[in-house]
Image 1 (tube, rainbow, N blue to C red):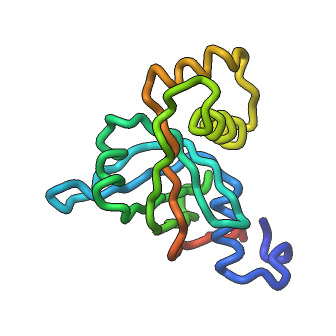
Image 2: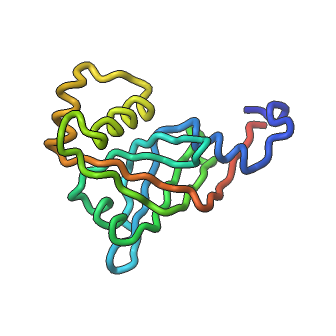
Amino acid sequence: MSKDDLGSKSDDDILLELAAGQNKAVLATVKRDGRPQLSNVLYDWDPDTRIARISVTADRAKTRNAARDSRVSLHISAPDFWSYVVIEGGASLSDVASDPHDEATDELVDVFRRATGQEHENWDEFRRAMVADRRQVLRVHTTHFYGMAQLPE
């Protein structure tokens, strides 16, 4: 994006476009001792609701941390590395997938499609794996965001 492409876009608009244009981030949750626990994740961003959705496993540290303390942050870097946005918010968790055709599994399918931009080669196998892995969706409900967008010269 060049300076001329910006037109009347605000800094906030540019940062949210950065979130919408990526699918890889670092999720920060709060450990029991107060230190951050960081995980590389794929996410799906909904610009209308400002909610990021992430497929997580129920027994992982990031999931347990978010269930205990819903304060989370999502750090998203642009390909240039210097541009970034941090999405801060409260986490909510879907139910754990317990049946290949339950609501939780349906949402995991949607997250996969939107986060990767792809169709899975075998949806029945994918759905069974979501149940076997005890997966669920972690949603980051944006309450605040900040960052910096470096513009090309």
